[in-house]
Image 1 (cartoon, rainbow, N blue to C red):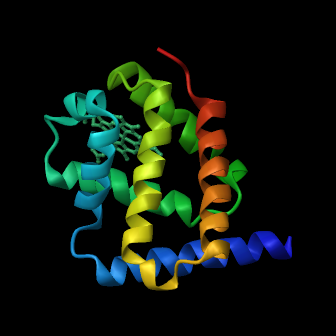
Image 2 (cartoon, protein in one colour):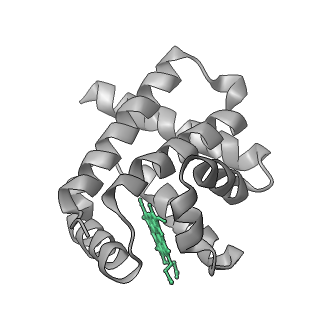
Length: 138
Ligand code: HEM
């Protein structure tokens, strides 16, 4: 339990650090994401920066959550809407989280060390598992 709490502290500190130093965190995430996943860029091409920013804000909110059981209803709703209405495929999620973590690393580079990298690896796995559990493949 203590390790979990410590990992969560590391996640929150590095997110706060990245938010402080980066002018356009959301832009950095999407640039990386679309390089990794060009099909996602096609799906998102009609969206303005406000909607794109709201999506990143929601992902950041989820990164501040420690136990994803609390988010089961939300994740079920969002992944189903994404699949049914936005045509988002299950295999588009991992690269998005990878792009988020790489962008945090860019902003929080001065505090990035092995323990921070490990905490993020675990966080990425946990959130992806929670998303996958609810995803309805299209
Ligand atoms: C943790 C994962 C994700 C979360 C929490 C999330 C959250 C959101 C939210 C909250 C919105 C609505 C924004 C608004 O209109 O206010 C949204 C829209 C959207 N998301 Fe995501 N998203 C996720 C992953 C993805 C992925 C992997 C894709 C792949 C391309 C994607 C594509 C879209 C698209 C296309 C829309 C806009 C739909 C429309 O209004 O036409 N999302 N997302």
